[in-house]
Amino acid sequence: MKSVINMRLTIIIALLVSLTGLWGNAPSASAATTHTPIIFVHGLGGSASNFTAIESYLTRQGWSSNELYAIDLPTKNGVQTLNAAAIRSKVDDVLARTGSTKVNIVAHSMGGANSLYYILNYGGADKVDKLITLGGANRLTTNSAPAGVDVTSIYTLNDQVVSNYLSILDGANNIRIVGVMHIGLLFNSNVNSLILEALQK
Image (tube, rainbow, N blue to C red; front, top):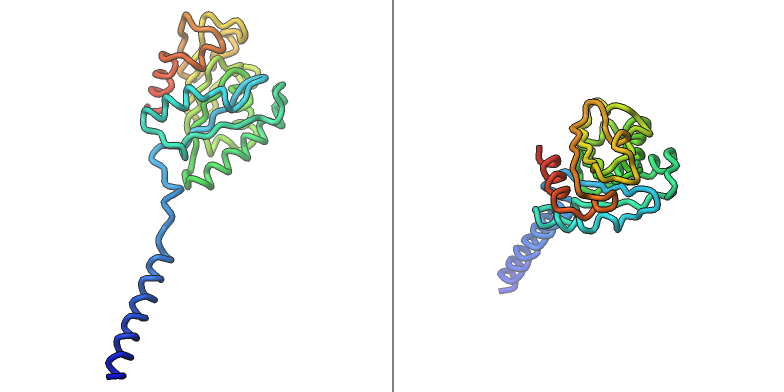
């Protein structure tokens, strides 16, 4: 009788050890993403909260919370070197979190110039797939879209903050709209649709 009990205990223990091993090797699903992660970069005097409406829109289009990230830049007055370094750190963190090889960036106003500075001078060209600027002060950094990065510049004829000339980049998909002010680019349904189209192409 004791031998039968001992045999059953041995079998049960062996099964538990086996199951524990299986559970211990189970991969974590927390980092899995369907879309290329997006990082939102604000402009002068802005903050990560500037993109709440756009994030909400993209969530309704199927993006999950672990695919949408916004950064608070360390200098609100646009010091390129400091802000580009912060963007680099954010990109590297998001890539590590998600396991993705690249990110997309959506930037408003001076955030466009800062993002371009990161891409051109801080190793971002190999880590950014798409850059979408909204009223971007892009030409404060460069006149041309960086090689290997798909750039879309959405700007408005009614922008009284950033000149249209500064937004337009050679080699980018430059899209001019009307009837929207500079800040309104962050809260406009037509702009949201253009962002979605640029992300999906």
